[in-house]
Amino acid sequence: MYNSIVLLGVALAVGFLIGIERGWQQREAEEGTRISGLRTFGLIGLLGGVIGLLSQQLGELLLGIVFLGMAGVMTAAYLANVRRTHAVGITSLIAGLLTFALGALAGLGYVAEAGAAAVVTTLLLGFKPVLHGWLRRLQREELRAGLKLLLISIVLLPVLPDRGYGPWEALNPYQIWWMVVLIAAISFSGYFAMRIAGTSKGAILTGLFAGLASSTALTLHFSRLARRKPDMIQALAPGILIACGTMYPRMLLVGSFISPQLFRLLLLPAGLMTLIIYGAALWQGWNRRDTAVEEPAPIGNPLELMAALRFGFLLAAIMLLAEALKDALGEVGILLLAAASGVADVDAITLSLARMTTHDAGLLQLATAGIIIASAVNSSVKAVLAFTVGGITLGRKVVAPLVLAAATGLLVVWLLL
Image 1 (tube, rainbow, N blue to C red):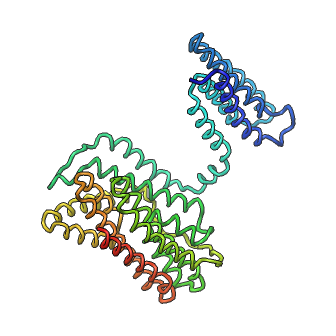
Image 2: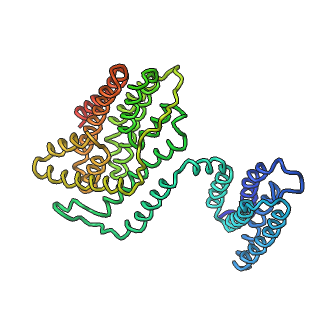
Image 3: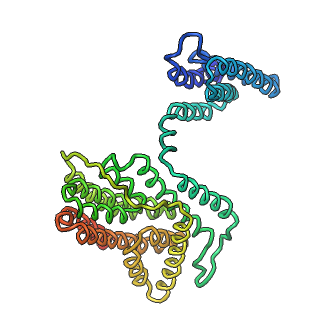
């Protein structure tokens, strides 16, 4: 149990932390024209801490009454400032009320919660230009697509039946849609990062973010660009490798998220494959100035409802085929399906095999082998795309690392599993 001095110290620190950011934002204003600054926010936090301590003895009603009083005082100051400056933003008003609440939270003994909330608040206040810049880069269609999928996920996911249907009870609606949402979220993080950074930041950075969304689409796009603009090959080749190399950590993340036991088995082959690709990209890009990509990569929004539904149907089909082949051909059938699936997509087979291990831990080694086989086939397909579409010069830079990574992954699986 914290003593009162420590609690008040935390409340004061919370106020100072938020006050530093608010004071810095208004540092150019003349003395006496600012509504609140470092000292004021520090005092607000301390007042919250004092009232929080007193409310434990005098009742919670005191906390509510003082909060309403604070709201009234700060609102009056805000209105006076609006009449003088015609600035109608209420950020500082809300920040002041939140500072009081966090100070009271600290006074009540919730030190960690108050500190964490204060840090997040300060970050949100300080990143205003960055956040607004991100919003300006989003198109209305992208925002609507994301909201539609979020609505369907939040509303639909809880009511979907969490049980198996169909042959071998392989189709679980709840798990299938949950995995669709998981992949969409990971893909959108890369898609959104690429939209924020823009292709002007360079081929390597574009490749890194695109690898989270679709390394195949990025490989095809950069290969076409290399065919039209051979002088850009020196920059495009490392970009392709970075995108392809990012697929392996993504694969490790997805598989381990569904089945944590897979992490230990996948880490070595996936880690070596990543190091080979990233190492080749670093070697080729060393001492070379990264080149801006004038044309955006044609990677569709992964939060589009139809894209999510298509992936859901693909995932369901692979889950059903996996059970059917396992029943008919045993382990060989699973490995053949993994190889065939890797031609077009790695996520679906990774999710399907990881899910199988949650029901039968004895399939962990088989699932690991299948996932690595799928990734090796996928890397080989992208090597062929780069060579045939991008030309011999691009192919010489890209094919060898991709094929070496695929062979290394397969060798590790064969030796250890």
